[in-house]
Image (cartoon, rainbow, N blue to C red):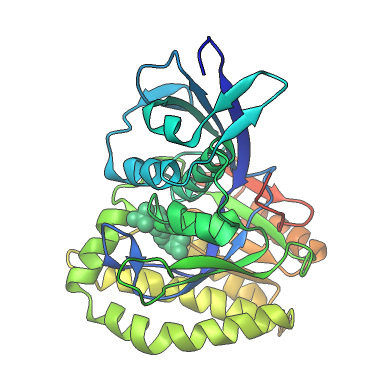
Length: 359
Ligand code: DP6
């Protein structure tokens, strides 16, 4: 392994948007959730993380840069992911470059990691989901770890819960699992990216500022104080998961939209039921909900589903291209450019929103 070689791997992973939300942990260290969740993985062209991981005998410590700025790797979440992947590293032989790394050498080699998001970090657009999924995927390739996507998802989960769902494209379920060690808390693909490719996603970027309450501390406070969360996790979500799986299987947009909107609203109700209450949506978010609700009602059948994560940005899923273009017209009418609202841009998934997360 002597010499001044560098071995590098680059991966690109899209973010995912939950249509049945994860909110609340039963184990903070292992990141084990209080309920199952379901998400849609976005088209990598629009919201994704690109990560290059490099290893070289000339590196004297692990280092990481996010969007060009060096960040600390001291946090427990990075360390958990690095530890888990390192423990699964295998022999690597790259004949072309003359690189040979034996399994046992990995523990003494250091890594350099450079990661870029093509969207605002920590503005409720699930940047940590794409980030940790991409990191774990790239490291697994670099170290020749033999784990399949589901096993990798259980590692990415320890970086950020929602990250486990970004290991797959299409529709993905994070099974909460029962084991105390979290081995069965992992993601599975419900349907691939081709299954329902009429759908079009439009994200209204209401604010690209960093959110005030992080998901991690927000959900901790909710778990400690909200009775509504207990009811949601035990009684509501298990039934909704079954209904959502059925809606996805049958490409039943009416049920899909109804479940998606209701679940987003209940997640924000749970935030409001937290003490002190957490407000992720703002007036513009509420106005967007009204516009979509009114339009859906006037059409008789839903045209668009909306969902909001831990921030004010609206993620809207239109049933087809026609509905997407009518939605954009409506949004531009209600929120014209340069008007006195905080809505500043749109991100549009113009083809299929559902693509394979792997490289
Ligand atoms: C509202 O996965 O960011 O987006 O596990 O603490 O890192 P940690 O939280 P995170 O929470 C995401 C919450 C959500 C809903 C969801 O994606 O299911």
